[in-house]
Length: 178
Ligand SMILES: CC(C)(COP(=O)(O)OP(=O)(O)OC[C@H]1O[C@@H](n2cnc3c(N)ncnc32)[C@H](O)[C@@H]1OP(=O)(O)O)[C@@H](O)C(=O)NCCC(=O)NCCS
Image (cartoon, rainbow, N blue to C red; front, side, top):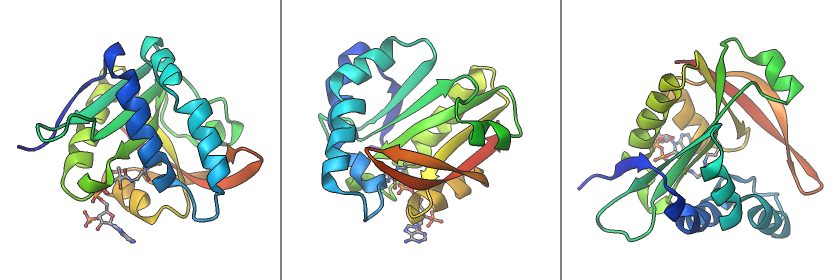
């Protein structure tokens, strides 16, 4: 059976932490030290952080599931509102905007259509929110994710910095109309 996508609930916070901890390092550059990745996971991807996000009316979290796995196989997160980052705010063309702030799929499911189904449901939720455009930041070294986002209509419109610990890394800003 192909994977299914549903809205996350408060009961998913622990499983969201587990899939996020497993997949976040895949989005990092090869130069990002393990200690910085671990600290980021501990601070931003903890179960308690997901519980807060699930309670936040400005956020929507979707999860991908399949019959073969008791664990989540992917998740996305949308964050409503204009961006705080001035470089991003100056770049975006479509308002109101919404950020696709997370898009992560278990590596066993890369290339099997799970990410496409998760993206379709996420874009539908973004449209339902009333936004006219969606944007995201992605490492300029993440070739696979950039190809995936381009395939789903996100054009490269600028650059921004991503802070992880004491490091500053370079992200592309991508945006699409909804
Ligand atoms: C980003 C992600 C959700 C995309 O899901 P996916 O199942 O891998 O995506 P798809 O296979 O549909 O699309 C990836 C595309 O990149 C292509 N690709 C893969 N490796 C590539 C490479 N080294 N160079 C160029 N293209 C590449 C694939 O061929 C595919 O294109 P195609 O469908 O035209 O053949 C998933 O890879 C993921 O979770 N990655 C780890 C976490 C991450 O980086 N998240 C994004 C954070 S911003």
